[in-house]
Length: 158
Image 1: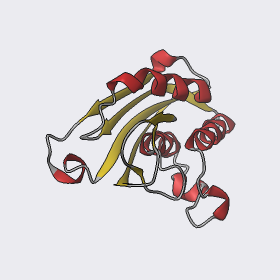
Image 2 (image 1 turned 135 degrees about the vertical axis):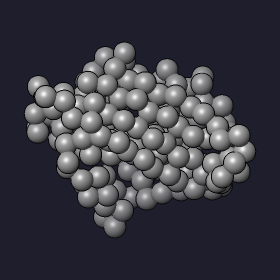
Image 3 (image 1 turned 60 degrees about the vertical axis):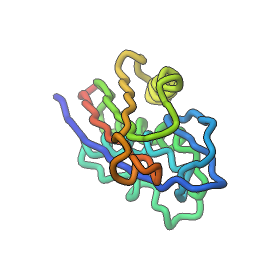
Image 4 (image 1 turned 90 degrees about the vertical axis):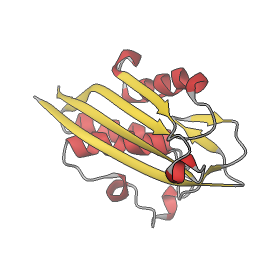
């Protein structure tokens, strides 16, 4: 049996924060604002996985009102989400994610992002697709005010 889920996340770019995407610390002049490390890519990935199984979203599992998640490493949260999915009898069939950012250029970092996600989720890197695009200077991402990500997950019954 297959289940499909979609995830979306967005965070504002601010000074004084690291830019972490897919568990990769990316050199940049600004970073993403959030209760955790604000890894918008991993947040979309987690929401797609949880959504596929009708298990809510990351806000339900890791609320931003909980002090224990302040500054949380999203790679550790993803590890827990993969575990929750396995506990419910599902593993990743494949993940297809897109990061929308005007800057910085993300292409050099995508292989490491894919490897991080695959490693933590216990699947092959060939099952993880990460792409990046701009919005041609349109909207909040095009104006470099924030970064967003979409993700679709195909979850497969073990």
